[in-house]
Every structure is written in structure tokens, then in C-alpha cells.
Image (tube, rainbow, N blue to C red; front, top):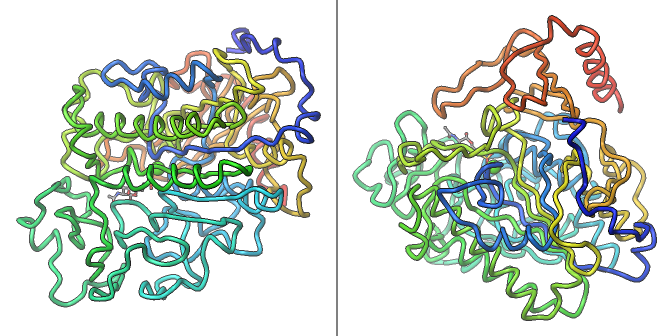
Length: 507
Ligand code: NG6
Ligand code: CA
């Protein structure tokens, strides 16, 4: 791959990055999709579904071909992005329950703190999945939460506590349940059901919107005719309707943009799409050949369009840096009988890569990434620079010319030059984490997957996990990680093992 690395048109951009911060303070909008694969957008080769808004963004910006999330699942991936610290340095960053405590604690300097301290208005809208409140399982959902996103730098938030398939199925706005219904007090447990409440397991006849896939769980509480993970009671009119989630998220994002159009803002916008349960609004249904999974992609694209339209309407698109990416690779059957597998029709969610979400193979963490900033970045670019979400933090710090507190974002390196499509020093390797905490080192040419004792194949989701008791080495020029060449390249294995060891022992 090394010989094909190029930054098309990048040389058009002659300004020194360091000179930017003083006179240009762009708004920054990070759009983080959920479980959207490398091959799921039409600008990344998808043919069974069209994503015109995302494609337009790519045409007027840079499309990255070697971008990586830190982890192959949501919570560790988001933790790393928002803190600039690898999730695997901590043991409490695995897929969080809906009643997990705040994983990023107030004393940690977050990406929102970075923007907030630089004078930006900051917001988190959409999926959160990084815990709320100060103690796991002890939140009182009927009162303002004692610890929330306001304590880690967000001026405004309108979020789902975890995922759409986990209780509580309500939005939280500025630390309190949105549209709180005092006639239906909320209780949440991940241990036991509440007396008299039906579950998907005992009352499958009540799953009128979406049935769970066999053996996948998702059969605890029933909300909106869909089984969830975890138990909840109450909620009343605060309970979300899955078909309206994208509208709620887009509406709040657009409102935040409108209200802050005259000051610099940072918007961390996390869609629920295309995570399960995939239950998009009627108006996105049936327009592609892939069923609900394709409809959810179309709905994601619509959300992107809403944001871009708002920026245009406010006349601020020119000086707004939009960065679109996904938290981890794709999954087809992730727990609901939505016919996603049967209707793929030849579509390859992870593009050319092996493995999907959860996996140590590239499909787990290779994600789409698009950057657009019309004022400073020429459109129509493609980049093969190796990028990791871990570096967004230090790169944004550079963009803002901000000083960082000691010990903050300690794994993050400044690669603003690459993110803005300029040539310059590239990250020599990225580190990837799978669901079993197996780490890989990916360089432009090689991929080393450390040995691990997890299952090699996840039957539930039909995913190759990349786990093996043996060290694995792949030539990435071949992309597909088929032939383990570790035995014939002991020197390279050793070099990549050393990198991993050094990273692990760094702090
Ligand atoms: C898994 C869920 C899956 C999804 C995932 C988290 C089962 C069998 N599977 O445990 O449906 O919710 O967690 O996905 O319950 S993530 O993208 O938020 O990390
Ligand atoms: Ca995810």
C-alpha cells in the first residue's frame, strides 16, 4: 500500500496550520454514526442504498480511506475519541449498561472541556453510551441527575443514556428526563424485572413493532412494542418512539445550531442510526432494496442533510468544520429480526475488509471519515493518511491553539495537518481494540493481531472475531487479512509487538 499513498490535491493547501487559530475559529460539528460500516455509504462504494447528503459532503471536502476508530464497539470507541486516552488503559470502558455511572469523570479534561475553555458553546446530542450519574444503578431518574454532561464541559445536552436497545428509553435533556411525566415515575434495573411488567421473553405477543432475533436477548422490558436489554417501569409520555428518534435528534441539533449561529460552537452529534433496533420513520422505508438496515442508512443521510442545510441557512457553512465518522464497524444481525441478512443483496457493509463490528480484523474499526471546511480546505480530496480517532483531541487543540492541562489526552497526537488534507507527518501506526480486548497494531503495510483466548467466531452475529491463540500478521496491501504470514516474518512480528509493549507500558 505504501506506494499508493497519496494526498490528491493536498499540495494546493499552502497555509501553515499553526497560523490558523488566531484569526479563524471555525465551528466544529462532529457527526458520529453508530455501527455504520466502511462500505455503507454510496461515496464509499455502496450500491444498494444512496446517501446523497453524505456524498455531497465528501465531494466538497476530504474522503479518508484509512481512518480508524479506536475500538470495535461503542463505549470504548467514544471514550477514546472524547478523552484522547485509549480505552484499554482502563477496565471500565466496556459496552455500558443504561444505568452505568459516568465513565468520564468531572476531573478528566474532555473534548467538550477543550472547546468550552476556548470560548465555544458546546453540545452533545443523540446517543451517549458513556454513563450518567455518580453511581452505577443508583440513579434516580425522577430528579435531576447528580452528575452529568454539564460536569465534563457540555453547555447543553439532549441524549439517550446508552443505546436504543437498552433502557431507559427516554431522552435526557440537561441532566433530567426530557418531557418528564410525573404520572409515570421511572425505575430502571439491569438485575430484575419490576412486578407486573411484561417482558419480551414472557410476552412475545406484545412485540408488535419488531421481534428480537432468537438467542440474542433483547427480551427484557418492552417499550413501543420492541424488546430491550434491561428492565424499566414508567416513563409515560417521556418514552421515545423509535420511529421518531432521528427526528428528535435532528430537531435538537438544528435548534442548537440556530441558537448559536453567532458564536463559535462545538456540536458532538451522535445519531442512533444505524444501531439496532432499526426502526426508522415511515418516510425512509421501502426506498432501497435492503430493508430496514438500508432505510436506517437513508435516515442517517437525511440527518446529515438537515445539519448541512441548517449551516447553509445560517450562512455559516463556510467556516464550519464538519467531521463525519462512525464509532465502529458494521453488524448485520445484531439482535432483531429485521431481515437485514436476507436483504443484503450483495451489499458488503465493511467494504473490502474482513470482519465486522466486535472484530480485531479491519472491519471492526476501519470506518468512513469525511472532513469538510470550505473556508480552508479544498474540496474533492481523497486521503490515504492513516488516521485514528484518538488524534482528534490533540488536533482540535492545535486548531484552537489551546493549552492542555498536564496529563490530559495523553494518547492523542496532533495530526491536524492530515485531518485538513495537508501533507506532513503521518501517524506511523494505529492501535485497534476488539470486544475481547485483543489489541492490534496497524501500519500502512502490516497488521499485527496479538494472541488471545476469545472465541474465533461469534455465531450470534456471524462475525469472525480475529481472536486466535497464535500471533497473526497480515500484509495490508492485500487488504483482506487472509494469510497469516507471522511464521515467515518474525522480525516484523517482533517490531510490532515491541510497539504494543511500549504503548502498554507508556504510563
Ligand atoms: C451487545 C448487543 C448488541 C448491541 C451491542 C452494543 C446482545 C446479544 N447484543 O451486547 O445488540 O447493543 O451490545 O453495541 O445483547 S454498541 O455499538 O453500542 O457497542
Ligand atoms: Ca456502535
